[in-house]
Amino acid sequence: MFIDSIPGHQDIKGYFAKIISESRVPHAMLMVGEDGMGGLPLALGLAASLQCESPQANSACGKCPSCIKVDQNIHPDIHFAFPVIKKEKLKREDTTSKDFLPEWRLFLQNTPYGNLNDWLSQLNAPDKIANINVAECQSIIKGLGLKTYEGKYKIQIIWGAEFLGKEGNRLLKLIEEPTDDTVIILITNNRNSILNTIRSRCQIISVPPVGDDAIKSFLNSNFQLPDGQLEESVYLSSGNIRKAELLAQQNEKSYSEDLLNWLRYGYSGDPEHINDWVTYLAQKGKQELKTFINYGLHFFREYYLGLNLKETNNLRLTTQEKNVILKMNKIIDRSKTIDLESLLGRCITQINRNLSLKILLMDVTLNINKVLRSEVNKFST
Image 1: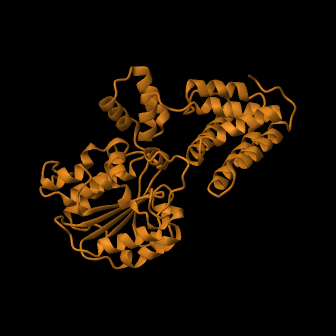
Image 2 (image 1 turned 45 degrees about the vertical axis):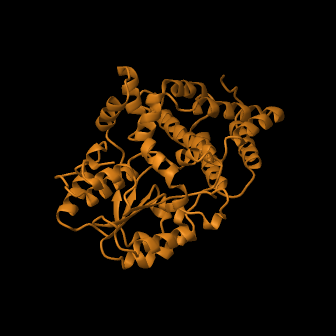
Image 3 (image 1 turned 120 degrees about the vertical axis):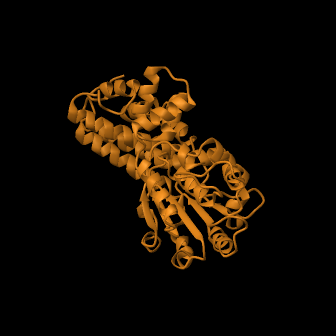
């Protein structure tokens, strides 16, 4: 991927062009932005520009041997590290990103704006827990200690850097005292999850939402949409390219219907219905469940805003979701909205622990019942 093909982010692109032209490329950068905003594509674009044999004013040429290899994600001096799961016959502690390079290249080709859930789906392992382990850190250190094969730089891209955890300390010396012509680019959606010892030694680049005009241009280039769907996809994406893609493909899961059903079953308190519903949710797997609950958090934030505004026109929700709001506002007031949002927030935290999903979801559903039953009203259907 090349810089000039990335939608939006003109300020970041300009910064990259400046540091390259002035030979002031930081040896370590931390790109911080929500999944789908473009952190990984920007890192790939910067790597392409750094390795290009005939660089243009603001981007790589796209034609030289180096650019051709970069475009195929096979350049020998651009290294990748990312969260992985156990690889078939290998021990988990011995599995590293190198064992998943074919799958990773396919992921970069098809979903460069994808998130962890997309990546695990690529591996047919949506319910697995991924991480970046000790062996990965040792591989990074070893790889960057070697000479370049053919490029100008040794570039290490670490996607999902928050999964380093405490193991990130193993890279501290490398970041403090890098070898010659080494560039390390860490990508995360949560800067606070990166150890302060690492964060303080990196040039931090904030990746904001993509502008509506840039998303519209991206969709026009990649999809044939009627005006109404195009405008709705741009508006509802909230600056997130991946979400815009899903909206354009009309592949977004029916999270609004699932959320409404969860509230209905929680309100009813019927043990048989609740048990069936909890079983259904648990079958989604951990990563898919986290995506669904994050949707619920987004929905309730917009819902709360709608209660304050007393109208839904300016909410970043679909027409179906706005209809859900009209059904809910007779029973869920501001106080209950805050309580429900808190429940879902705690649920996200607990999913990351080794807890039984069915027990966790049963507990959340029973607590939903308590919140909704705090006043006796008939939940609208």
